[in-house]
Image (cartoon, rainbow, N blue to C red; front, side, top):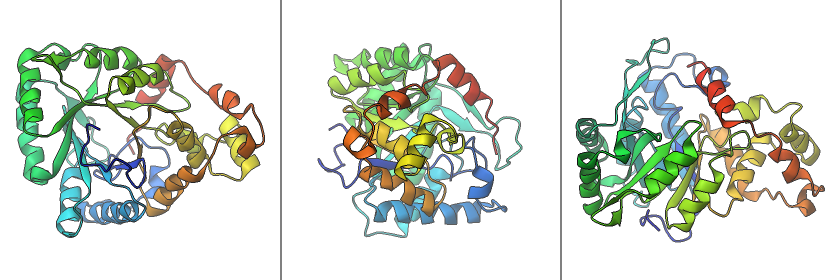
Length: 327
């Protein structure tokens, strides 16, 4: 397995992403009720540590941050420093976006994207300043088919040099052309060796278009990490009246657990990220591990087929996502 610090059979296939906890603003629905009204650096770090503690207690061992997630790398580093007994945590971060909001919820621009060799060198130094040699995975943040990392040889050689030091190198993808970006990333080699060992992509009941490409990545030996499995909270806050909401009501299972279970059942899934902002949300997400979507358990052979009708055209999904407010 490319993330070779993860045990062959990790305690749980769930990971924890800190996108919603490392900064005061993000695009997850319901965020206003999830977080303290006063989102100082101190209160957000306290909450991040509470959720990290809950995740670790549940067996979560993969933790996902990014340079653009405000102070997420710093919060994670502080959490580990205060718990020297933790040696089995696996840390992944990302470069390619610069956080620009200055800890303001109402900042006009929250982050700026740049996939250049200079940005990689600068942000790798910053990440190492917080995580040091605990960094296990470094991913290119939000690759699209036109991203320079797919063609820039100097940048690719810099990433290959990092991989040669023992840090796994991967990509994350976003946008309606995720399948093309994933397939292009699988073809990138340096000195005849595939450059990217992991692929992290958005995949959920509303946006499953990357599924076939992720299956190809898995078949090619890459570890697949799924992000936004709850569609930035849409699958929870818009569940009423949907096939997901009806199944939740009939089975007495929370929508978040059902939506995560639908992703976890995919045979190519390696890790599914929880984006929990509270310990209670983390508890609910973990309950997905006990959910079965077989006809025997749900009472209806058509449940999975009905859930599949929730899928939106990829361009429409990503337009909707782009319109979500930072809150």
